[in-house]
Amino acid sequence: MTVTFKGNPITLCGKQLQPGDAMPDFTLTDNNLQLVRGKDLSGVRVFLTIPSLDTGVCDQEVRRFNEAAAAFPAVQIYAVSLDLPFAQSRWCGAAGVEQVQTLSDYRDHSFGKATGTRMEELGLLARAVILVDNDGMVAYAEYVPEVTSHPDYDAALEALRKISR
Image (tube, rainbow, N blue to C red; front, top):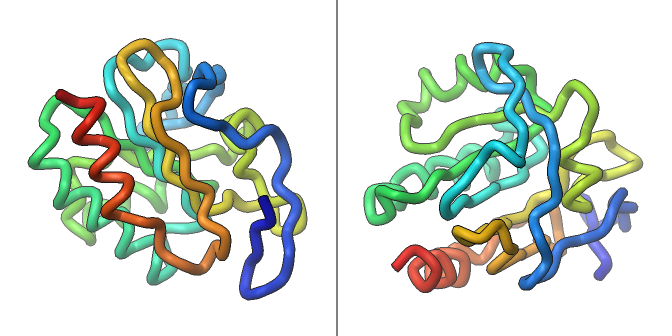
């Protein structure tokens, strides 16, 4: 699949995930600078990979999933970017986002590499929505073809309804 950023083709590092793949392990950093290991997460999970919370589309996307979270109380929703944890925490406070946990891939880019979302040319994460079921398997994956565009919210939320029953 070709992914572009402002119309220019970009290279994604790693393998893009497909439904049926096992969610690979990774290490992220939470807003308290604590390590979060993928293998330690469980239940139904949504991973939103975004270039930066300080951009309009990313801001709107995380807010939209924050609002949708009320319909999925048992689901963990994570917004993953390369923003520093301090900036993520500041943004969540200012935006009133409490249902989406922000995690940073700034240390070693292991999430971006493990999920095929790291943009080689920019050193940022491409926009993607990855849903993981209770068994740790990818149930839905959308790599947005144009990074500056929104994901297909309806398709992602419909897939989430199916796996969170």
